[in-house]
Image 1 (cartoon, rainbow, N blue to C red):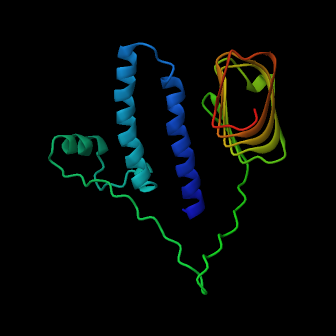
Image 2: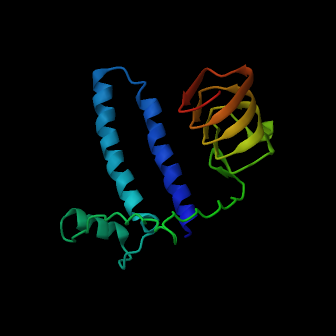
Amino acid sequence: MSPGSQKDFLEQFSDLFGAVDIQGMKLDSKEDKAWYKAFRAVHQDFYEFIKSQYPKVLKWAGAEKDSVGYYKKALGGEIKVAEPVAAPVPVAKPAAGGSAAKKAPAVKKDPVKVLKLKTWECSYFVGETITFEESEVDPNMTFNFFNCEKCTIVIKGKFKGSMFMRCKKIDLKLDECISVLEVIRCEDMKIRPEQKVPQINVEHTQAC
C-alpha cells in the first residue's frame, strides 16, 4: 500500500469518526447524553486500535482457522493478546544546505462512483457533471461525496440523505431530501432543492 493511499484512508476515517458527533449533539435528556458518552468511549478505543494497526487489521492473519474460537479463548485469558503499537511517524530530513526537502507532487486520484447497498459513494471527481436519474434514486437511499471539486451534481427524485466531505466548488441540484444533508470540511457549496430539505448541517465549511 502506498503512503498516499494510507494517508487518504486515515484522513477519511478520522472525518467519519468525528461526523458521528453531529447526531450525538442533538440528544437532550441527561440519560441519553450519558449513554452517548459511554458509547463514544467504546468508539474511541476501536478508532485508536484501527489507526495503529491499519492496514493489517482489515484482514484476519491468524494461523487458527476457527477465528471465533480464537476470539473466545482470548476473552477468557487463554491467549495473550499484544497491545497495539502505533507506527512511528517519519521525520523529514533536511536536504543538503540545511533547507527542508520539497514535498512530492500530489498524485491524481481516479474518480470512483460505486453503489454499496443503499448508499452511492463518489470520490475524486473534478470538473464533471454527476447525474443520478430517478431509476437510481429511492427514499431509502443516501449519497456520499468525498474530495470532489468543481462538479455539478444532480439527484432526481426523493432520497433519504446525503453527506459531502472535503469537497470544493460544488453545485448541488436535488428534488427532495427527506432527512438530513450534511456538509463537512467543504468550500464554496451551492445547494439548490427543487422541493425541500428539512435539515442541513454545516460543519467547518467556508461559503455555503
